[in-house]
Length: 200
Length: 100
Image (cartoon, rainbow over all chains, first blue to last red; front, side, top):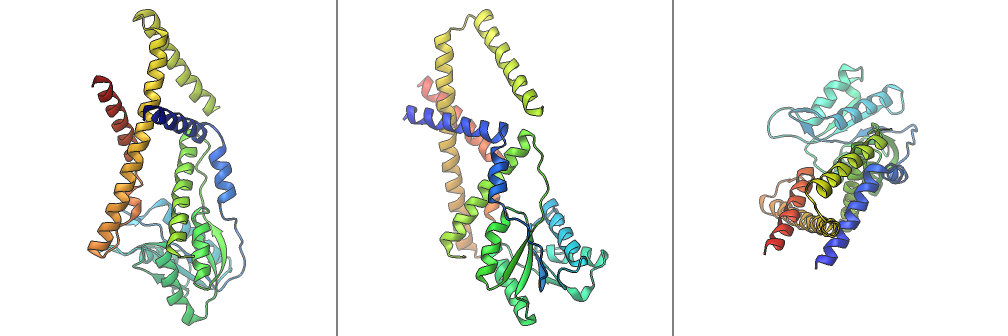
């Protein structure tokens, strides 16, 4: 028993050293991540990332800003913002829609899709909102790691997907590499879970 | 540069601790080997605690979703504090085993 624990401990410490002191996490993440493919589409779908104290967290803000920039560049006429709806207060899509209007996106071009918690729910809700409008191709905005799973789920719903990653550089320090390792592990777990659930 | 400083920093404090232990407190080399083995075992136990904690938390999330019918985010269990506490559990259990 203790020998097995010793081996597990040695492997864990080696993995920790590789994750913090070597470029391995960034190399793995860059190979796993979805590459941008910015083409003309019917709509831009900005996936949710959750609220933080009733306001947009960094990833949510980063994604919606990227989506607004793509819309203002004329890559698609519609901007779809998705996200959670808390029991009280404004929802993530409402806050994002307000920001988009403030930054010059015409109100008629903004579609909010609220009450969704997972990527799978976002894909289904986006399909329900966009199919009547004849939207079949979308520029999908999320983090480059999340987009691997999200693209497959949206393709399963019948969309033609052009990935539009909105990432920030997490830096090259040890804690930055650890954050990349954690994000990668989380996404791989999510990928396996979605695969097992038959979402794509 | 940051990484080199990181390694040097940890290396220097480890060396200082070794010199202090060996010269000031008269600690032995076999004792150092045993401490290394003990640390690896404690970390290994910590990993096992982490797996158990994650599995239990995932089960709790699944049960909460089934019972409440609402959404309970699985990201709730994605917390670095869980790693720290699991390692603490590992070290605690290892010491307990030593003391019988």
